[in-house]
Amino acid sequence: MMYPFITLDDGIEIVHSEILPDRRVKVYMEKPDASDGFHHATCYLPDYQWTDIDGLTEAELRRCQEVIESTAHLILRFAADGGFENASNF
Image (tube, rainbow, N blue to C red; front, top):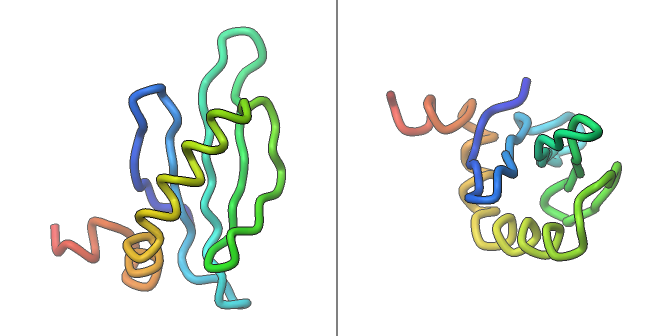
């Protein structure tokens, strides 16, 4: 299952998984593109392993990296608690 996390001002949406069997968390980014659908990338925490990068620019990837690094503690907590809504008791 994937849980919504944040949408950046440039339209990139960041979602994350629950804690996977290998103890990592999948963080997935996507941005709609009118000409070819969606641009996307995947980053696995806690080791910041990037995979499946398609269409996002180097600047967009750097920004995503900065956002993920600065909020990784939250993403990992939310992944353990079933997403933001469960972690925040909404």
